[in-house]
Image 1 (cartoon, rainbow, N blue to C red):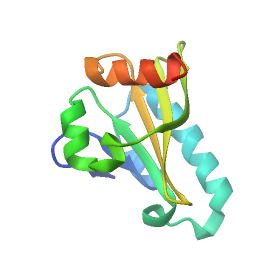
Image 2 (cartoon, rainbow, N blue to C red; image 1 turned 30 degrees about the vertical axis):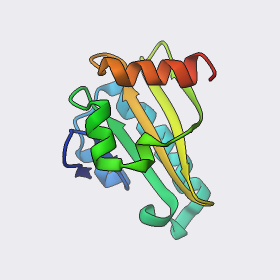
Image 3 (cartoon, one colour; image 1 turned 180 degrees about the horizontal axis):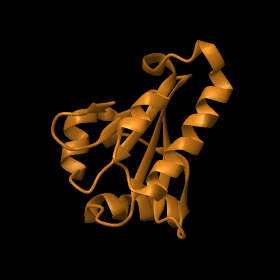
Amino acid sequence: MQFLQGGSMITIRSFDDLERTKLHLALHNAAHRLFTGIISTFKESYQPEGDGYILIITSDDTDASLANCLGPKWRDAVFEGGSWDPEAGVWHTVILQGNQFTLSVLALDEGLNGGIRKRFHREIAMGA
């Protein structure tokens, strides 16, 4: 698990990373389901730096902190699909980088920065 400089976003590259987090239950469950899918796809060949990983956006993050940490991965990213789970209050999107690297982004709506929420809403909920 890694906390990236400039914000409180959390990277999940393994089940151990996930278990060390103190995530809201709905967010933890969403991350667990997502990571299970990642592992079932790649199996033993999974390499987070080449294949991708999960990024958890927290309430302390801002659009600026995400751009500072992720650069073009955030600033220029096109959300390649995504979902909003109103019961859990969790946003999910995918950002593709090249042919294989996938950044799976999760965020709990409660407490989410307004600018980030607007972007999720614009690009996912409104189908932009």
